[in-house]
Length: 257
Ligand code: PGA
Image (cartoon, rainbow, N blue to C red; front, side):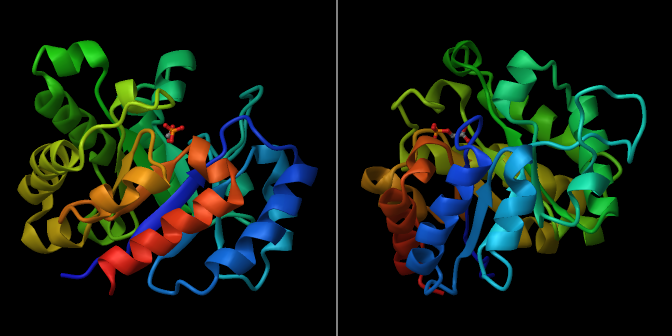
């Protein structure tokens, strides 16, 4: 089963609309040649329109960093999947920063995933354990529960548009990444096997699962060499065009589809 690797740059609260447009104009020509990799940038909501316009006709796709499950309504500060839909192909949900600072719950992640799928978009669902959970040996059980909760009520057909990002919280923005083998083992046991139990072999084998947490050009080869890792969700290193391009080049070369 060959899965097209997917590299997504999560810019978090970085880059103004003007900076984001200038950045994609510089980045796109560097990463366009690698057709065997899906390439995605996730700017601030404010920049989605301008970045989508700048990337019109490009193979580089745009993601929103979140989306509310209702299409519209009295939800001050929120942006719905339906509102983001004209500009994006993907929406990141369940990021640990949203879970930690914005009270994102498993139930909300599930409702968001369904709304994103109903809009014809692709959710990138982030899961991952804290340092305390990791040290207590609770990682697999915890990540399994996040995956099952996020996918509750999602059909096998819809699952084909889902990407899951395994991001150990202790590795995000810390410079401290999991080892490739460690990440592969958790992804296999806690993500792919959970999906296997819920949906069967074909769905599990087709599911794309990213690793995230301090991914950079220097460790990308190690992650991409793992059989269960199909790309990366990247924060810091996605803010520099040379680093972003290096990550795409390594994924393209190592996965070599
Ligand atoms: P990082 O962020 O690459 O800066 O660790 C990853 C993420 O938050 O998705």
